[in-house]
Length: 78
View (cartoon, rainbow, N blue to C red):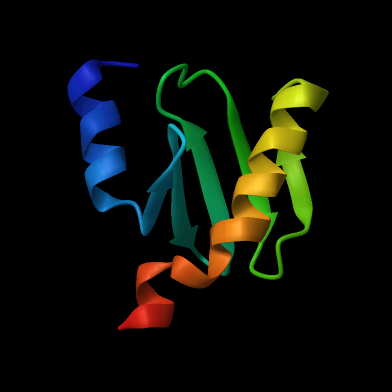
């Protein structure tokens, strides 16, 4: 993925934590590893894993980030 596209995703994300961009889209949360954008995850708004191509260790890491920081999503604080 081109670097300018990654920057665009990160800039438009609702939250960026630990190198992951979290973006609310269509009733779901899209998560992109901005350091390695081949890896992504989709969560429900409740934080349930819906789909991913991340390795299990990375999945667990992202889920911990989500659990600790989900309340900080921009829309929740507006």
